Length: 159
Image 1 (cartoon, rainbow, N blue to C red):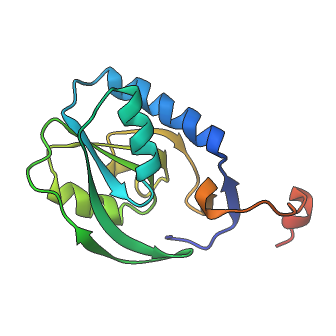
Image 2 (cartoon, one colour):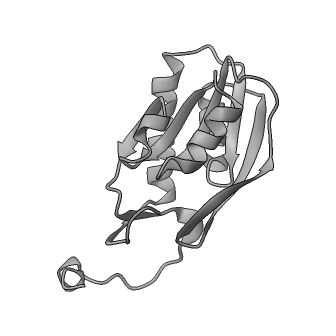
Image 3 (cartoon, one colour):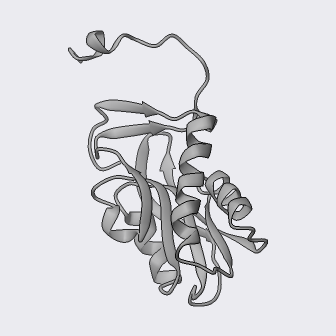
């Protein structure tokens, strides 16, 4: 993450599903598509939803490691995809600083890059996204959280 976390944006399974379907609506207008390249791991769930909604059966993955809990580090490519990306969608959950996105764009320069969420620093890297969040916000995806007590917002303002 590019800045210190000042706020959290929790996303439920239902919200992620709704936002991924909204992304599908936008992408359907720009198709047809040959298939999807999901950026693992975060892009796997949105990619499955988009694949279902657009009736795409070809799904591949690019595996990039760039986060350790809440700290971004230099991205490492663990698995690549061949080709230019022409006719393919790249799907990820989030573009943050754009570091991973630029790396994937270099690998698949002709693909259409879509994310569910985008932060200002990463927005120029993607072609399509649904929701923008501030750069200092950490998105809490449903696979990263468990139910617990939530502090009232007013008590967090002094932090």
